[in-house]
Figure 1 (tube, helix red, strand yellow):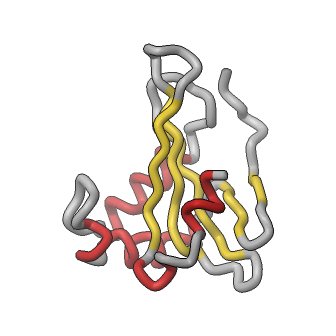
Figure 2: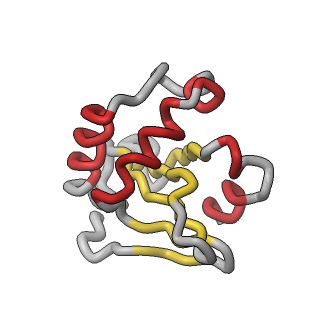
Length: 118
């Protein structure tokens, strides 16, 4: 079941939240970094691609089968967007999800992905 009321989740160091328009520059910067794109399905991320992505995510809700719901990962202490975390609700088997995450290289290796997923 979709959660239209979702706004954010938090942990000691992170906030997982819906994307904001102001996230666009940071989002495109880390997604365009070759060290990040190397392990993804894209090679770079233009501003226009970023706009389309953020607009599409604004219409998605967690728990909707067959879709990826991406959440911004923000450091609580700085308010900085450091990456994103996605949930993909599967049709079959039911009630199972795939997770994925993308972090800016300077924020990798600090346990943020583990904390976000937890």
